[in-house]
Length: 428
Image (tube, rainbow, N blue to C red; front, side, top):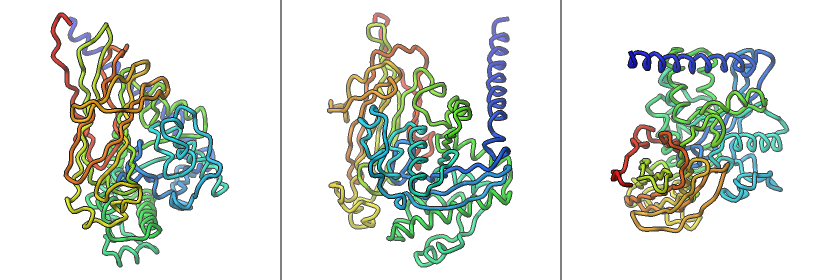
C-alpha cells in the first residue's frame, strides 16, 4: 500500500502548491493590473549582449501603464539618458563591497547585483530623480522573452522614427520570434554605430511588441506559455513598491531575490558581470554544473563548475565594430572578453577555494545575506575556453542542491548541466 499512498501524497502536495499560487495571484493581480486605479511600472529591457548579474545591461526603459487591465506604453528613455547620480544613491554595505558604488550611480549598473529587489528599488529612485515620476514597481524582460512573445503574436512591423534608421542600416523592419534576438543583440550594433539610434531601435521594438499585446494580438495559451517559460528561466522579474504585494511576490522566483522564501535551502548561484565595456557576451557560450563532492567532517561539499568559451571570430578585433569589442577602452584587448564570475553558496557555508583549469587561483571572498560569495575575474581571447571551479564547504544543508544562473542568449537547458556526484568510499 505504501507506493500508492506516497504517489497520492506527492500529487496532493503539487495540487496544494498550485492552489496556493493561484490564491496568491488572485490576491494581488487585480490591483497590480490597475483594477483599483492606474498603475505605472518601469519596464527595463535587459540586454544580454553585455552581461549583468540578472541578465544584461539595462538598455531601453519605458513606463508601462495598466488601467483596469488595459495596457499601454508611455514615456521611453535609454539608461544613458538617466545620467550619473551625484551623489550616488545609498547601497547596502555588503553589496557595495562586492559591486562598488556604481550600483547606485549608473542606471546601466543597477543590476550588477543578482538581487532584483535591490536593483528595482534603485532603478525606481533613479527614474524618480530624473523624471519626477515615482513608479509603482519595476518589470524586467530580455530580448529572449520578446522572442517568446512574438512566437505567439506573429511578426511585428517597426514604425516611427526608428524605421528610417533600420532601413538605412539594413536591419529588419519586421521582427519575428526567430530573428528578434540576433537583431537586437548583434546586428543592431554591427550596423548602427550611434548609441542613441541603437536605443531608439530597441525602444521601437518594445513599443510595437506591447502594442501588439495591448491590441489582443496572438493566441492566449501560447502567450501564457511563452511568458511562463521566460519566468522559469529567470528572464521575467517583477518588483512592487507596495509592501504587501511584494511580500507575496517574494515567495516566487520571479522576485529575483537571492534570499528569502523563494530561495531553496541548498541553492547556489552563478552570475556574470561584463568587464569589457562592450557587447561581446553575445559570443560567449557557458556551461554550469554542480559537483557534489564527498562529505568532510560531517558537512556537505559542492564544487560549482563554470566553463566559458569565446566563440567570436579569431579576427574579431578587425572584423567586429569597435562598439561591439569595446575597442580596448577599458584596457581589454579588442575581441577578448573580460567577465567577473560570481558564485554564491548556501547560507552559512564557506567558499573554500577557486581554480582555473585545475590550477589554484586567487579569488575575492565576500558575504551577502549570510551567503558566501566568491569572485574571479576572467579574460577569454577569441576561440579560448576556460573552466573555473569554486569549492564550497561546511554546507549544513542536506537537501539536493540546485543552481540559478544569469540568463544569457543561450537556452537554459544548454547552460545548466545535470548535477554530478563524486564517487565516495564507504569509509569517507
